[in-house]
Length: 433
Image (cartoon, rainbow, N blue to C red; front, side, top):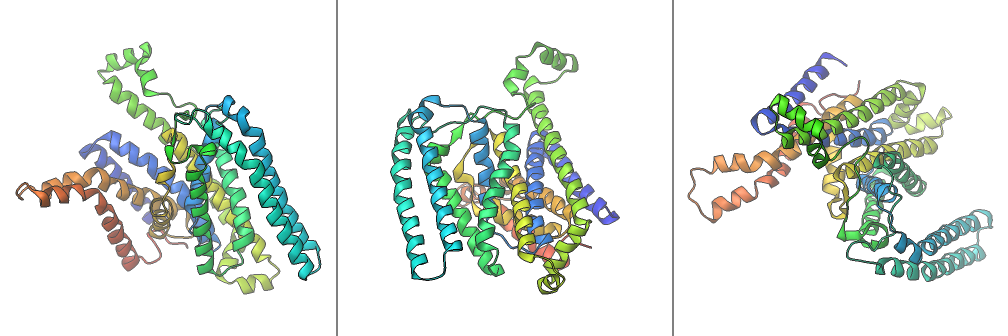
């Protein structure tokens, strides 16, 4: 890491310190947690764009699939709902996959012509009606069980730390399917295709109550080991004695301690990823990916399978993003499908990569920490700043409106920050060497 990078990271660190001193350490640590998660997401996007030049706008779909993994791995089991139709629903999904596989096989191995078209159409149409005939009645029975609090099949009740790699696996499988369809498209068409598929994923999570309770949200997901609950810490005699001896507030201390544990866990994951990605970037494989990115025709002429390498990097980047989505939901303890919007979980991540410097892993980390801080600090400090700025105005509708819309100034703040970076450092704060 060069001197410029050290100064920039020190400056970002100072922003978090100032936030703790001027606002509160609780706010500062909370922003740092989300900043670390954002940095992990930015690393996944940087793999796709910075390494291979793949412009995907379906990041939010990978993040949502990672969150869904927490529901299946860590959600409380609902044996009554599963007994009502769980196995039948699984069988219906197997039938759907088998129908698609049969259609692909028919298209691949039959001779081109009218007969092949008719056979593939018959398989797809017949398979669809068979799938719906099996799947729909099972879903109705599952959702009919105690819909106010359940109405879903539940999960395995495991510690949510196991959901982190599963979230990466979910996103990787989806990326494989998307890549087989869309990676042959031109850049702009790839962006449109990935955005559309991500919206399909989000709509499914919102609509399928049997899976995730949809827009009713799924709460009560367990925290990852070894993160304790604040109320348990406050009821522990040893912890209370420690706080008493040092003159600490048990509530504040427990809250900061839990946030500190999350920071250490997420920092470890980020550190391992950085180590692996730096080694990959500087390996022959990393040099090959950059060669493909810079000139696909020349790389193909040298015998490199461009489409296969694109698929590999697309899957790996999506897996990193999916894992971060699982980490995010396991920290929140709930799945809220309504918060998965392209603005928050696609374009904001892209801004992090652009500001930090695409193609540079450390630049993505810097962008995640800096833009994550900018996004959230306006939420917390915006009303205070606006109240001070409008202190001279008379009380009324205008003053109230300005204070109320202060959190939305984060869009303006990010826009100005992005314009400044693009003007004075077009390749990012830490550009690729």
